Amino acid sequence: MLPMLMVVLDTSVVNVSLDHIRGSLSAGIDEATWSITAYLAANAVIIPMAGWISRLIGRKRYLLFSVIMFTVSSFLCGMSWNIESLIVFRVIQGLSGGSMPPLSQAILLESFPVQQYGMAMAIFGIGVSFGPIIGPVLGGWITDVLTWHWVFFINIPIGVVSVIMAIFFVTDPPYLKGMRMKIDYWGLILLGLGVACLQLLLDRGQRYDWFNSTTMIAMAFIAVFSLVLFIVVELRAERPIVDLSAFRNYSFCLGNTAMFIFMANLFGTLVLLPIYLQTLMGYTSTLAGLVLAPGGVANLITLGLVGRVLHRYNPKIFVFSGIILTAYSTLLMARFTLGVDFNTVLWPRIIMGLGMGTLFIPLTTLTIAGIKKEDMGNATAIYNLIRNIGGSIGIAIVTTMVGRRAQFHQSRLVDHLTPYDPLYFFRSQQGAGLLQQRGLDPSSAAQGGLGIMYENMIRQATMISFADVFYLLSLMMIILVPLVILMKNTGETQGKVVVGE
Image 1 (cartoon, helix red, strand yellow):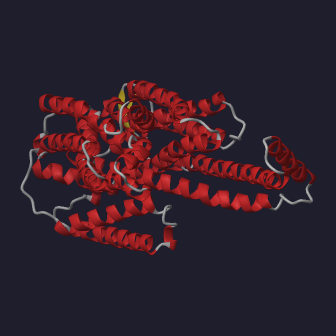
Image 2 (cartoon, rainbow, N blue to C red; image 1 turned 90 degrees about the horizontal axis):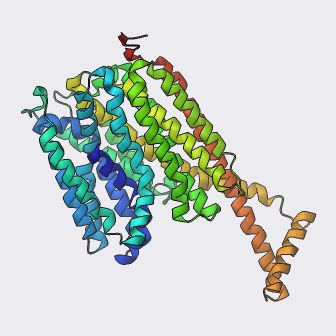
C-alpha cells in the first residue's frame, strides 16, 4: 500500500505548489503545468504494461526496481535546476510509478483467499482514496512552511521503508518468477502512443479549447487510431502486452465500466469542490483543505469497517448503499448557494466519504473475484488503467462543463439586467453611492456601480454552472445501479462460499 500511496499522492500534491515552482524556476504557467501533464501521461502509459513486464522479469524484481526509481526520481525532482530538468525527472517518476498500483493490488489479492478480498482491498483503498484527499492539503502546508522542493523529498523515507519491506515480505508465486517470451513490439508502441495521446488530450483539452485546436484534433486522431489498432494486434498476438481475454468475464467487464464512472465522479468532485470554495466563497487553501479532510477521515474509517465485515454479506448491498450515499451527497452540493456556511459545505463531503468508502471495496471485489490468480497481474493492470482514465475524463468533463455552462447562464442572466428593471436601477445606484463615499467622482462611481452588478452576475452564473455539474455527477452515480445488478456475486456469505446468485 505504501508505494500505491506515494504514486497517488504525487498525482495531486504538486498542483498547489505550481505557482511556487513556476516562480522559483522562472517558468511560464504553460511550462509549469507540463510538470503535471508529463507525470500523468507517463504514469498512464506504463500501467497497462505492468502485468506483462512482471511476467517478463518477475514481479518482486519489478516492484523493487519501480520503487527505487520512483524514490530516486523524486529526489531529482526536488533538486531540479530548471523547468526542463523537472519535466524530464517527472517523466521518469511517472514511468516508474505507473506500475506500482497494479503490482500492489495484485500482490495484496494473491496474499489473501477470495473470502478475505474485502480486507485486502481495504488496505489498497487507503492508498487510492487517501492520496487525492491529503495531497492538496499536505502540498500546500509543506510549500508554505518549507519550500516546494520538500513536496518531492517526502517520498524518500516512504520509498526506503517500502523497499525494505518488499525485500523481506514480498515473494513471487511460481508462475511469476520471470520467463523468456517474445516481445510484442507493435503492441508496445501502439499502447504507449495511444494512451499518452489520450492522456495529453484530456489534460490539455480545456486549455486549448478542445477540437477548435488542430493540436487537440491530432491528439484525438492518434489516440483513437493507435488504440483501435492496438486491440486488433493484441487479439492476434501470441504473447500480448495486455491480455484482453480478461474481458470475457462479464463481471470484470461490468466492474471496469462501473469503476470508470465511479472514478470520474470522485475526481470530478475533488476538483470542483476546492475551486468552488476558493473562487466563489473566498476560502483560503487551508480552509478548503479543512472541508475535504473530514470526508477523507470518514472514507478511511468506512474502508476499514467494510473490509472487516464484507465476507459476511452480499457485496452488492454495500455497493448500493455507497451509490445512494454518494449520489445524495452530490445532490446536496448541487443545492449550494453563494451564502452557504462552513457546516453546510462540510456535511455533504463527509457523506460522500462514507459513500465512497462503502462502495470502493465491494465493487473491486465483485470485479476481481472471478479472475484466476495467475491472471491477476494482467487484470489489475487493466483495472487501474480504467481507474486512471476514468479520473482524467471526469476532471476534463467537469472543468469543461463549468466553463461552458457559466457562459450559457451568463447570457441568460444578462437578459434581466436592463435599466428598465427597478431593482437593477436601485442596485447599480446603491453601488455607485458606496463608491462615491469612498472618494470616486460621480462618473467613475456610476461605472463602478455597473461593474459591481456585472461581477455579482458572473458569480451567480458560475454558481449555477457548478450546480448543473453536481446534478450530472449525481445522475452518473445512479447509472451504476443496473451495472451492479448484472454482476455475479462470488464470495462468502454468512460463512458459506457462494458462487453466482
